[in-house]
Length: 99
Image (spheres, rainbow, N blue to C red):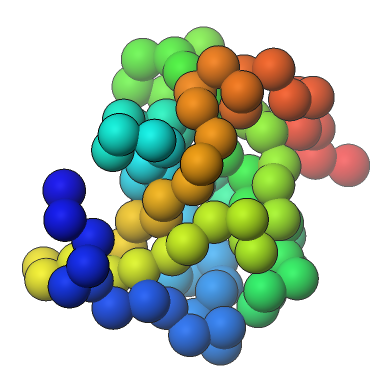
């Protein structure tokens, strides 16, 4: 996927309403997970990504800073993000649990 024509999201758009369900792509445009939910808003928020599993079953939730993800909107208006982390690197992170 060519991300060069995709519009980067503004910091004010980094909210749960906008990011929930967004696909996360790793190196080589491999799908590495999707946004489960968000804690906070803006560049300081934590994004919880469901990694692995099938149709949401067996996925491991991991929390990462939004600043480590490059969120953008494609030509169809769909939100996604790219990261340098691989699926294996994300799976190796501590599992996120909501308080």
